[in-house]
Length: 74
Image (tube, rainbow, N blue to C red; front, side):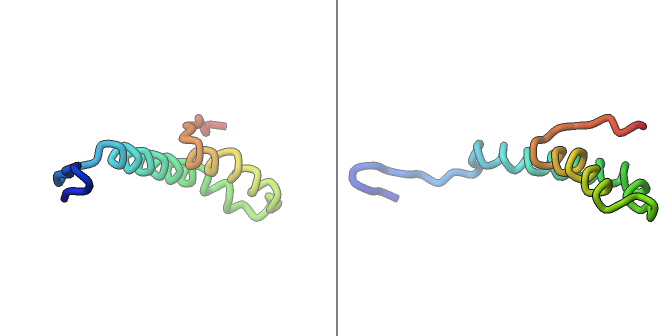
């Protein structure tokens, strides 16, 4: 493809997008691991919704959004 004296060729892979895709996959895996580690805690009926929400926000959400990894042993 040519535009105003510039010629653009076809590429097989875009490095920047592949890095983002790998980061998303890594964060998703981390979030899933966190969820499975706290799944039993979140199913307790004795815990209030506020406590469950706090566990979600401080462990699972941060793991996915910021890519943080937590030690969930209590």
